[in-house]
Image 1 (spheres, rainbow, N blue to C red):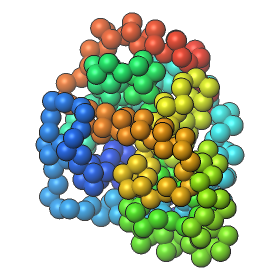
Image 2 (image 1 turned 180 degrees about the horizontal axis):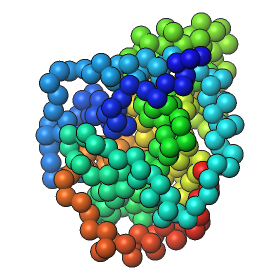
Image 3 (image 1 turned 30 degrees about the vertical axis):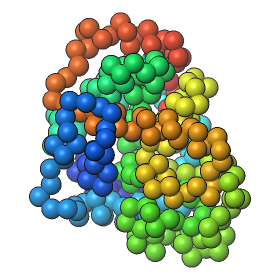
Length: 290
């Protein structure tokens, strides 16, 4: 398909997050210091670039596409580097037009993790804040934006109308495939999300990168922090089991730190470096494979 090689219509990767904030301006954010109303001012309620992004995302995120991407990228055989070099690699994705901050990807991760640390959460959750967008390195491997960011959702079953811009799924081949277009599709009732294939993107990628290194609560935060149709709308309760519901309390705890922790003042890395070097060494190997 010719359109599958398109880089995507967003001006920058964070434009999707701006749209999330418009859709979900949480008035009870646990991150203090700035009201949610002060974030992301818009001249119009919807952006054509975001709509076009989701047209591509919803058209091409099929069950077969996801399976292919999992085979391609979860082999982690494209690149290996020391973890701090990996953060430098991620930092090539500089957001030049975020209306809230001119900080780079690394500083956004630090702001998220520092907000978590200030509120006294466990150190593994601080690490989640530091790592949660690491999967965006997929863009540096030539992946289109619609296969890196965006709200995530299960594939292999009917698309919920609670997913943003559900009308664009009409062009998705799975929507007319009787194997995939029923309520449960290839799954069974309350089978548990561990048995469900999610749309492909940075959440799924970083989850697999972190498996075996942090507690399950942290893995759920990484894997499902963009699964808004569930943790904001409850659209996929029929696939979740009791363990998923328990773990989603952690997902709901994490998300405000990601969405509402940006501010114009960069963290002082010289002061913070010893703490984070010890933290990373505690949980992660010295090198990361991509």
